[in-house]
Length: 328
Ligand code: AQP
Image (cartoon, rainbow, N blue to C red; front, side, top):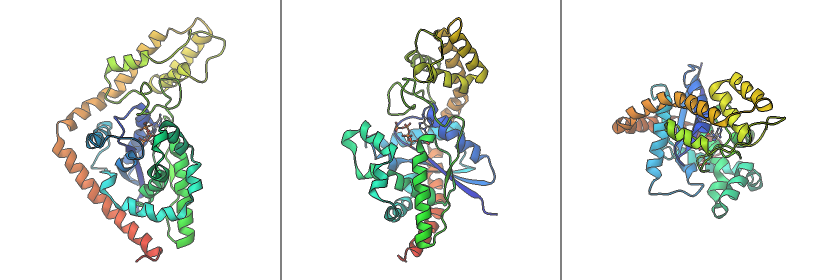
């Protein structure tokens, strides 16, 4: 039986953080190890252009994401690892898909509105087009499983709508892709507001951070007096407790919750314990990263082979779509 396909990607807007790791990469790793799936993982460099970026550093930024992928355990023997723009079939399919969605549908997406708020000068066609290109990223491989964080759900809904519309209008047989959820599908920001994000300073902990940096970042996270009648469900303290649960377990979180309504929490102790737990999880990732950092030729080869493999599959599916649409 043919294997099911998986696609995921991350923008080259900075080094990966715990949110990217727990929300997306950890799911990518699970599916990579499942022999029923064929996994395609890209650095979404074209999506990087949808918000302000520096052309001088883009190549390095792409390389950082590849290194983070390999460090986290993505394995070129098991997964096809590539850079999005090296498979131009994504763009061609995206144009064809753009005939199947309305402008109004795109304008109403929460992700679009948030980015326009974040970058009022950056309300470009590329930003509006993001979900259409994302649908093409996925469906050019006929992937039906997509390991991404919960913030991407509205985009997946668009991909499903496009698949349905294309199948109805042109008789194609695109699957309706579903999100592969992980237990870290939404990692909140250290700032106490919104999600951990590469572009929000003070919100994240990077996979490359050492213990001292982790401690410094946690030290800046807002807290309160450590005592009260009810444990906060939003804000800095709630976010710290979510991280405690993810890195130290549910029981530890319960202990802190009890302390909050009882004798009180010592945040310096909480942050110290949490920093150590995060550091323990990141150490093996950082060790693996070093090996790839020192072997740039190997990384080049992985990307070249990945693009070649991805293009072969993408080209076949694009051709079939063009035939169905009467272009060839
Ligand atoms: N806080 C998060 N919790 C869980 N998952 C998250 N992801 C991002 N933040 C969290 C997931 O990581 C992948 C990265 O997606 P992206 O880089 O393409 O876009 P993004 O969501 O815009 O990521 P960032 O880190 O917030 O970057 P900037 O600041 O550049 O926009 C996706 O699977 C996402 O769900």
